[in-house]
Structure formats: C-alpha cells, structure tokens
Length: 180
Image (tube, rainbow, N blue to C red; front, side, top):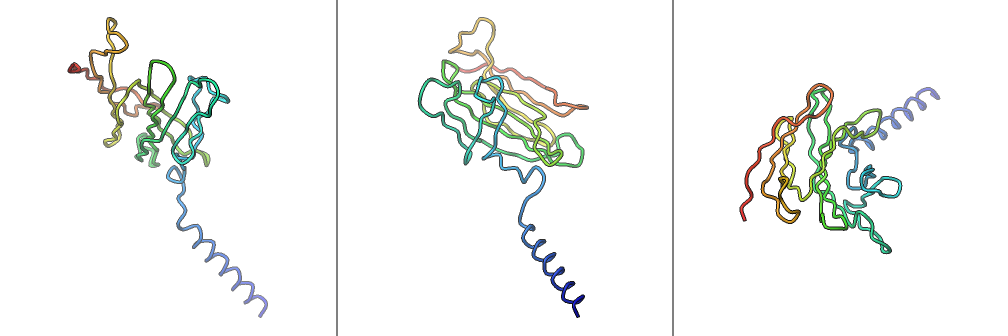
C-alpha cells in the first residue's frame, strides 16, 4: 500500500512538472533578447555591456554617455550554420552622442552550453532593417567614398552574409547611387 502511494505521488509530481514546463521555451528561443546584456566593448561602456530592459535602454542623466539610447528592432530565427540547431539573428538600433547619430548592430547568437553566445557582429552607421532569407542575412547602409563628406554619403551598400565553414562571411556587396 505504501509503495502504491509513493508511485502515485511520484507520478503526480512528474505529470505536474511536465505540465508546468511545457509552455517554457528552451534553447535559443528561450533567450529573452529584450531583457539581455549585450557586449559592446567598442563603445566604451561601463563593464562593456549594454543591458536592455523591455527592449529598450536609455542613458541616465549626468554627462554624455557614448550610447544615449538603444532598442531591440528584431529577432529572427534560422539554422544559419546548418548544424540542426536554430540561431537568433538580432538587430539593435543604437543612438550615440556626437555627429554619427545612430548605428544598426546586426548580431547572431548560437545556443551552446545552456547560454547564448555571439557568433557574428556587424555594425553600420545609419543602417537599415536586416532581413533573413534562408541561411543568409542581408542589410543595407550608406556607403561613403573617400571624397564624401560625413553628411553626404554617395552610395548605399547592400550586403549579404552567409555561414562558410566556421564563421559568417560577406558573400556579396552591391553599391548603388543614392538619389539626392
């Protein structure tokens, strides 16, 4: 009788544990990129991290921080490296102090050892929305020729990146004149 009760309790525990975790996402889809600490070593931030809360960051008062504000633009999932596991392509819009204005940051994260790990990063001043088609990432941004003033880029670069071997590489860059 005691054994039957123990088995019944164990069965109930297993059922409720399975039921409680059924709605939880695992792997890369379980990562909340809207509430995430991104490494930004090139922006001279305290502790080299930019932490979003509810998809946003806004610098607190006092001084002129290098990053004034940031927001999560998009997260798109795909198996870019074709290992059978999804990765997350993340786009962050970052507003900086100074004349540059804003940057789009294009990032890809893989889920390894129970954590998200960055495997790709590109940043473009005044970049546009990233798109994911199949196993590729495409984005466009102004392109400055050597003679162009900072205010006035003469072309737009459309770039495509794909996984080759052990990393992402640019497979295409098409330049087109900007209309004035």
